[in-house]
Image (cartoon, rainbow, N blue to C red; front, side, top):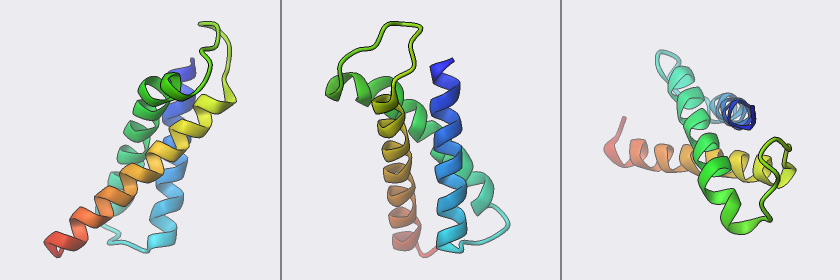
Length: 88
């Protein structure tokens, strides 16, 4: 269940990042949502246990949700840097 919540928070961050950045409409919306969801999954599953106390397997963790959203935003920033460098 937590994995779905992390992916959802990442997708929301991706959608918000798309609307703020004003990118190309043809593929930027889908790409931003997918990259945000993957970043949220990585942040909640891999990064959060290194920096926060581990929660019980069935419990919800707000710090893990925070790390999921932060990692999604970082993944979107990297994507924008790569696209700007390539001129896309």
